[in-house]
Length: 413
Image 1 (cartoon, rainbow, N blue to C red):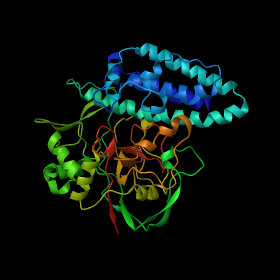
Image 2: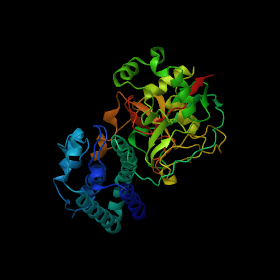
Image 3: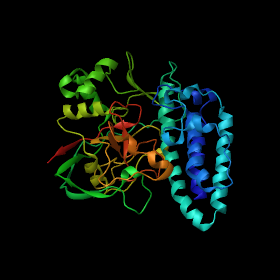
Image 4: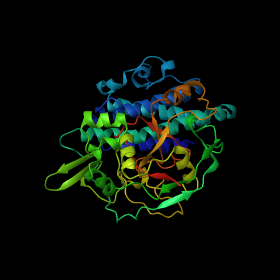
């Protein structure tokens, strides 16, 4: 557990390494957070979830940090308003590095010295803290990508990142599932967030799932057929958003008069590759594309039922590509279920039957967000390896585009 803790904590520092102190302060819009805030917030979480509860001799590095780096835990008191996290010029990046080192040493000391009965109680909250930090590692990359894209110079997060040019993807095909009464949700064998529980039965009608995500080339065909100008394809809220924001392409797409469409990546501006999965689309765009294609988006139960037959393997953060590419379809079922792009589902983010929130500090972790959001499944190219499982439920409002979100189609049999 010490090795796992240190490895995850070290990865966060590695992700921040290409960034200057100025980069780490930027907050480009209210839903994103500065890199240094992520680094401090995850340390604060270990303080309140682990050290304050179990390390009897622990004294906080700086008690006032609770106000600065609490995210949304009402029971723990007031906090810096989320849209104003970018105003925190102090503490400095160097001071946050000291804060992280202080917390790391305290957690290691607790694990190495705690009595057996205390250690048994520590391991659950510690694993929660590790999984929580992995969520923020993905956010570090998605948030800084949006921040750097907001700079007219379009600077790269890491210019050495190579965005692979894939071979042409296989033609889209379909995998049939007979449905019936199936079980979804996490079992008791491994860690799961509260929103993955309890495992329960649900009824599925027979359905088909597409063999891979929708590609750039396929989405371009939707655009060229007037997809962003045809209200009959769009949900009402989505059509209103298209009109207000003047959307005409996915986020990070830029059309150059001489070079055609390009895409901003964490490696900088690159030519748009027709074979890559389309990414950075909202739920509204995914649903409109599905309507144009004469299909629909899968429910999260359909996705999980199909994914349960496939190994949890794919294009994750450890591949170092930081942009989705074509994966080998080695399984017998649908390809690219894991990694590459988060896949929008048609399922509202609701509690499962019999849902119970975590106890203690983490009681506010997931449950209070279960309204007005849609579920995404599968992880992305910037999801840390080992963080995804078939039951994992990500969730965002339907207008969200700055995450690595893509499209997989489904249809009824």
